[in-house]
Length: 407
Image (cartoon, rainbow, N blue to C red):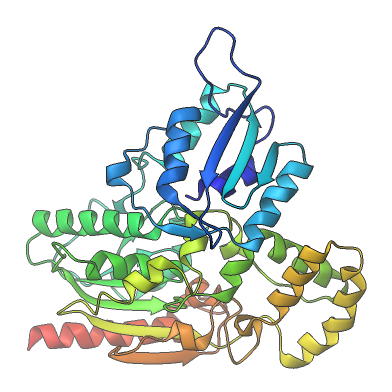
């Protein structure tokens, strides 16, 4: 996870920030993060500082390293954290200095380490004891700030259709390559345990990128995956991810008087490396989209076209937004204006989070557009879940695969 943003989001005077082991510890800890001429820092520099000064234990040779831009939204988050008294922040031309209070809280430290470094033991592929390796099987992969319990209606639909489910649970705001590597390991272990098992992965939103990384990146690839179905996956990134959490929250507050409700549940965190990886210009997406499609896997992309605002609503709320903007800082004003320009929000061009164009995938075996917003794509809201248009697409793909396997 992006340590700079973790600190801006969660560090407070009573939270553990490590400690220099000494008889008389310093009152503050100073993190020195080098910046290049483009205002970028390297993840390993952050890990290295955390290891030395915050008690982290990250093996640098095993953690992915890349350059990360210190985006204006991140600068804003750090500035807000400074105003709240959580830290002192100093931006220099070639250096970012962060000073935090040197207090101790071992329980918080354990929680941070388990979430941001050690892979939690409960994050894995989950299946019932009655699992039948010969039966029709779907692997469900959730998205950002989601969890397996959000697939309840989806699992109900699968049960009605005679399809068994496996669920992959993962720390959903960490580096996507990290999660993809773990899913690959889990799939390789599964096919070793059940030789000949065949699986269809159904992945929502960011989960589609995790699944693609698992089956596409170089190295030993799992052979058990026959189909990958992505639902609202930002294959080319999402511009909304550039804006972080603050812009979404402020827009939601600003829209309250207008009666327009925008469910940002899947963007609730907005502070981890996952959000950085979801930006259209991210190094992760450049790397992923350069791998090429996995041999022997049929790809299917489903994109939603129901945005949270129509063009008419967007025009109508404009004056209300302008009234509120005057009371905000120039940086926040620009964040809101940029957010309202995102085509992801607009009915017909996006599902509220991902544009239709980004949700579709080049060279996919099938591509479908459905009138759903980002959450509806896997919530399967309204009526019986097995009758939902999205599930009907999945069911047809699964039935086609089973028929082909029988020939």
